[in-house]
Length: 249
Image (cartoon, rainbow, N blue to C red; front, side, top):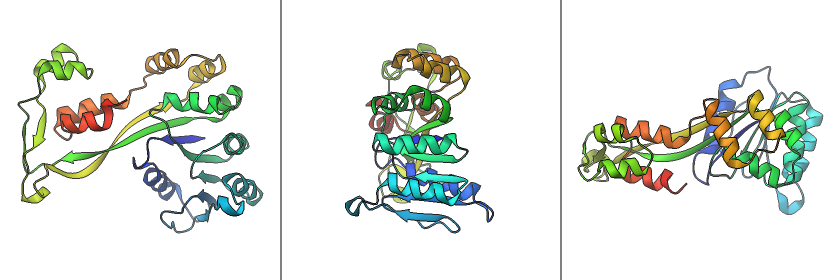
């Protein structure tokens, strides 16, 4: 099972659709249950869930499992019943994709446990969690060094003093190409949690959130704030946009 998490409007569905498009081939049976269906994908069986007439994600999933799919997309995990069926589908040889509303990748596991899902099911079925945000990209035509950004501000968001003293942060001053906004286009900011053997063991032993994050970092997990730092240094992200999208976490 692969989960994509993030707040509304962070591009989760777009990410999942691009994954399905990438793996889709004529011999593969892919079924999706969504509310609503946002784009139509060629060669993919998509159904629109309608909770008001009793056709829930749970009902759609039950009917999917009778159609022998290789890949199942569940638009959103909202309750324990849906998560249980999705996890069981993953354990019976189906590749299951879904979305969840959490702030970061590690807290998705806590959310699933809080929904009442047994930790052994989560540990056995979950293979990857990706959290994402969408940020506005600095306009390349008018970007200039932002003189207002001090080393102290950068240290406050996690830079080392050495990095902060050397860093140059940019902003768009506004031009005709970007409608005087200083931004042009959008970019994804991601973190990926690979649920490997040691993390599965951590889920089984009921590690607390902080212990779990420490274990994940030991295994190479990189929080999305670190990707944000890279984008600040490359000039693709302004400090203001970093604060708007990532600092509230």
